[in-house]
Image 1 (spheres, rainbow, N blue to C red):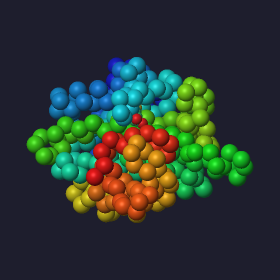
Image 2 (tube, rainbow, N blue to C red):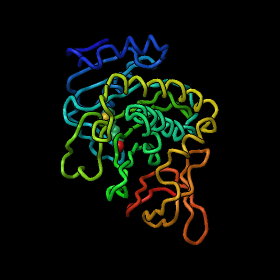
Image 3 (cartoon, rainbow, N blue to C red):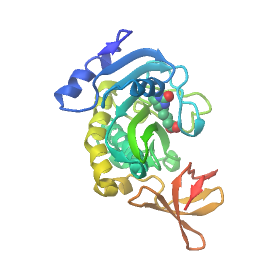
Image 4 (cartoon, protein in one colour):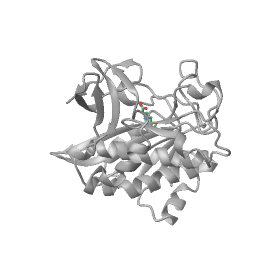
Length: 286
Ligand code: BTN
């Protein structure tokens, strides 16, 4: 472990446990009490030739970033905030598929942390937000699934190949009370019923999923995980009203595009942008 601070106890053995599991990810591990953004540290280190699998973990970020220019905020020490550097050879055209696989790895780890019976409640909202549906059979059961984790993937390219990927992941683990603007939309492992959410175990499970699936998808495409992805798809079968596009989500194709059946019967393939079940814009539709 490389660090300027004394590492949080629940994360102290992650690096050696990652090695013991035979993972190519998780070492060297740099832990810091506070950083601007773990993605910024990882990108800087990538330029300085940090190796595949290196990871930056922080208890707090002063400038945590999300997708679409949003901020990512998290109470100090309560959650998992980390970025892992991947140098998996991959053509540029496959980058969207790797982003989806990162979402699946986080989904699977969160489902495991939530324990028995939670598997069907943990979903991926295309492209890679992880949501948890309420399991209660009362009036709350129809509430929208809440976001438990977000992923920001940033790449460095050489021509038409991906040279390095920084996969930045924020998972709400211990937070019970969210700021008022998030209160209706966010949840955490603890809030959603995870008995003793252990940040170290959760982090290791994410790394294991990435380690297993990223090289396979980079080499062979989404086919190997496509069924899992469809089973976890939070938008499938749901009506979407998104910018100019109205329709019903029919799933995700093998190139990672979201399939939306318009009300006039034609099929739209969404390749990037933000999709909401409410009113929002989809930036590019093919
Ligand atoms: C999103 O949902 O929009 C993505 C959120 C990604 C947040 C994580 S926290 C660790 C890493 N560092 C950052 O600045 N962002 C990512």
